[in-house]
Amino acid sequence: METPLHKKRWGNGDPLHEIISGLPRQRLIVNSVALRADYLPSSLPHRWDHIRRVGQVLAPCLGNGRPSNVLIYGKTGTGKTAVVKHVLERFSAEAVRRGLRSQFTYVNCRIAGTEYRVLSELCSSLGVRVPFTGLSKAEVFSRLRSSLQGLGSLMVACLDEVDVLVKGFGDDVLYELTRSNDASSPAQISLIGISNDLTFKEQLDPRVLSSLGEEEIVFHPYTAPELVDILRERAEMALRKDAIRSDIINLCAALAAAEHGDARRALDLLRVAAEVAEREGADAVEVKHVRAAQGLIERGRIHEALSSLPIHSRVVLLSAFSMAKKKEALTSGVLYTTYRSLCGRVGLEPLTDRRVSTLVSELDMLGVLSCDLVSFGRHGRTRRIRLSIGLEEIGAVLEGDDLLAPIVKEMASNHT
Ligand SMILES: Nc1ncnc2c1ncn2[C@@H]1O[C@H](COP(=O)(O)OP(=O)(O)O)[C@@H](O)[C@H]1O
Ligand SMILES: [Mg+2]
Image 1 (tube, rainbow, N blue to C red):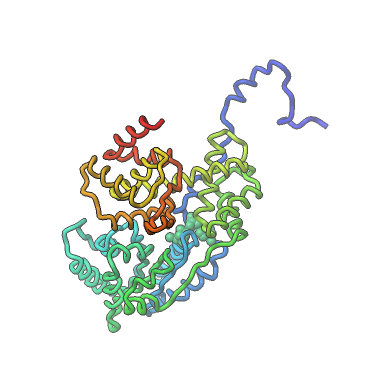
Image 2: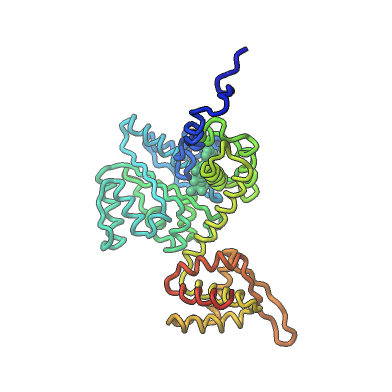
């Protein structure tokens, strides 16, 4: 039998060898969009029950009733946003087909940022322009109501990551939105509130809770086998056919499941691993690429958390950093003294001991510092504080701060 063409040997001095081998191979990632977190796949494995539940709640909007409000919660990456967007898309297409006036709106409260912006996005989905700033909340609210009245239509509004809004501004807007329905008019609002925070309900006024939580749906974390199915579908869309083996998909799923069953995390791992493999010019994604992706993601996460710290927390961190550089033991007392002197150097008014102590606890929760109470005999107890992440990483972030950079650089030159 003849040797297949791709196995044929062309002999020494093949004049085409250099030209052909110098050409880049076919890319590993053929459709990077399908690996992005905001990509909405048309099928959502292991969420059919949830899709059905949300669909049942919203069903009256395709007749002539007002759907109950619904509160959806579950940890990040459990498919809440994907499920609700999927149902909204389907219902809004069906409403158009039936010639209904129902409006379907999705607002992400974390991205909108303020109550005003949330309300103005609701308005603009009805075609009402609201200036960027300047109106009172009550005015925006009344424009929303009157345009809804004018249209005589029902509005199904999803407020995603509504816990962030409530944490920042309280639940006034929710209160207004939930109690504004006039049963005699077709112009009504149904709310879908989504929260990543499981304790969110405790932050709501009982009246808001009883109205927003007319229905409740909980999204549980994905198991490793469920994540495997999700990843497999996305990998098929995104990667070249033979670019990934099932054991690599299993690894990504297992790592994400061990964390908290977060599909976003699993997809991030897959995407970053594929990017690393592609950059290396590898033929397929291997275990080492997944390990590298883990490191990159972890560093990205810390960097993000640190970069958004308020200035006083940064100075606290710088104080801990400077003591660690000098290899000196750090207690809360020493930390506070160092903090005060650093505040003096950069011209900041120092906060009180107690406030700083709260900031230290926050940094502890972020996983940047770790504190434990130690006893000093009759001198009582104090907190011993240690850095939980590498000096270099902290240094790099602090150097990105214009105000603190000169001090960080000086410390680096003194102690190396
Ligand atoms: N069942 C599923 N099937 C396919 N992809 C999913 C599924 N659940 C979540 N995803 C994907 O995982 C990522 C995170 O999901 P998302 O809905 O944003 O989670 P949440 O809103 O709960 O934080 C998105 O890219 C989404 O497309
Ligand atoms: Mg979400």
